[in-house]
Length: 324
Image (cartoon, rainbow, N blue to C red; front, side):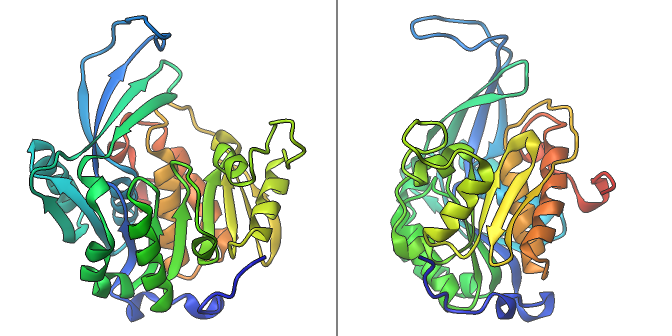
């Protein structure tokens, strides 16, 4: 069942003036190497693709940039390599005003890289080589303690090692911050970490993973998104958001369960759209929105992000969002 959180939800919403950062992201920083294909190869097959395009990415960096572009005060805790990609990634984050005081350059290690194939329908397949991201550890979290303690919301994903995520989540919760975990890529999560999440953000596949393979696996687990969200709340998190792509999201927590539709959008490239959603969710929670209000705003941001190619290059400013 749901564990005791170190702070009451309503009391945790510090206003903009009481914290140094709206959102601090603890996570990955990658170079996205993207090739467009007419169809994905089957095993043993070679297909021709488009020219290689290199974009700044990584789930952590994506969320930091998306929140900053929406007007948030944002910091990042992570690692890049001492290669050419590292300088490129630093410059991209700095251009959007992300605080890089705790983005460490790792000597002798390559920066993280994501190999992305982009189909004509806008969907993608991704392989991630973590590189320097895999070196992020509890010592980095301790060094960034002031930044983490100064954030209204601290956001995490699982492209960096779990010990770093656990240490940072405990530090954030202990300082009265709100912990948001995006379970991507899916991995086993310690019960104590789940109890700190407010919310846990998952897609349908990640929700099924946490619920033991439910969601159509024929094992009797919940299959409907609303049932998945409610079951996940019972497993420990304070609240849950299940993302459904173009179908919107389901939120569940102390106020019950609700479905929130997504605005209509013609998908050009879905790369990083989930990160844009999570970033917007975190920012609006930091500014005092309820979970439902924040999720409704975040669906607008996610829908806007699929209309352009690339991850960070597709993220809108607040002025660029279509009307609600």
